[in-house]
Length: 616
Image 1 (cartoon, one colour):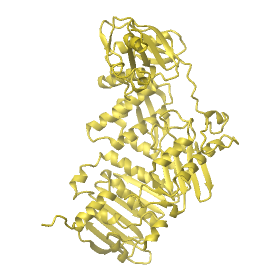
Image 2 (spheres, helix red, strand yellow):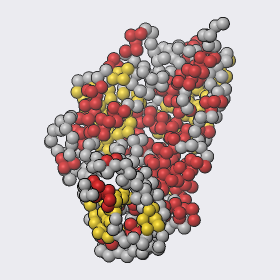
Image 3 (spheres, one colour):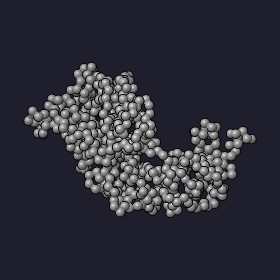
Image 4 (cartoon, one colour):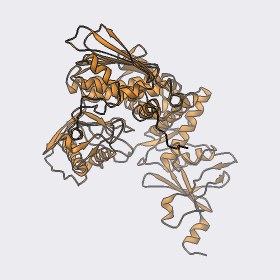
């Protein structure tokens, strides 16, 4: 009996579709790239229900003859290559000839096209990979591809689709990215009959302003660097302009949008010592490399590439970015590609204001008894309530760094401190850690994570009880967002409102900020809002559907707000302020980690210290 069988063409096509068509955004990417290869000067994308109901891409490119249109939907038919050697000299986005046939096998597909020289066009309809239906039609020159009911015949794939807003996020990213790479081409994106992008033709600067907003685009630094066969151009942000995620870091090779961890590492190396911890720059890098030195045939979706000279590319990016940062300051210093740039090397009178201040703040903080939150004040005194007679959670599990000194397993345990036990000898270590003791134990608290946990619990409790204190602006603040940020905001108005951030549309991608939580009222709320939207955007990528998604975004945003309103490492505290923080932890039965999962307080027993110093 035969065990090995020859698969049917239908099954083969659906397997291939699984490699090429990961989600609706994959279809959009393939169809937009086809339009670019067709030399279109205008591309319009229409989306319904996150792309699962309809994806329609229309262009005014050169179109196809009836014969070419019928061949295009067959597997491995292409006009881009003829022999193996052509793979080493690719100058187009598509070349394998598998995208259209794969898409047509898992959707209700229609291709209509007409060349300028012909009086009529052709329509090719395919339902789930079945035999094409071909008719002659009238239409303007160009090509339109409609993909309806994606994955209708593969329910196992359909159930893995994310929430509508998540799929829209991925589609918006694809269109925004190609619109950035091709400013000479007009792009229009409509989602559920709502215009999201309408970018006319122009230059790179005006396109960036349209997609990223004027505030960000006019503060980016131009980059133009080249040596030998490698040329790099684009924009990078000054170290003062940072984001909490890597979502604003884009890389293109010969205008092909790619993903490459090595390039991201090179960018962060170039910014070494210039960025705060866990903050990332805004970058759009365009690499021009001879086609024979880059292999774009290593991934089914062509999103990843392989370089023939990885190290040279890496070093070139590091040097290009560093020279751009230094040129903005007027500095004539030469920076070696393997030497980290120090923040002191950047002049403070830079027109781009590149200095990022990492000096500890000398601002004092006081506990507000009404909301148990720290506020900046000129006063040196604070008051705090003594906790009632209870037992409270306060310490942490073991921490790997202490193991180096022999304080390992069994030493730093999660435990409780009786409120009757006096705590004394409060002091601050490195303006970051609070050190104190009882009669039998020593404690080390991270002032930021302790305050962050307190803020988080208070904020979430206020949201549940609808008692959140907000600060309304007498004059609402305006903020201009990028296209992606505006879309994320529109999808999450209600969640932000729950957390005290009230925002109203003001035309286009401009919005009015009417109120914010009282904790952040004195901060740069425009910058904070952009960071919050970045946090939500990164959460959208992995969020589940339904109520869990809403809760995940709510908690992620609350975590962000709690972090930004907490005292920071480097803030000098008085003894009364340190006592106030710890007393709040004592009277609140809280987890022994901050919302990010880091320890808040570590405890080391006196007996353990005696044992480690051989004092038996």
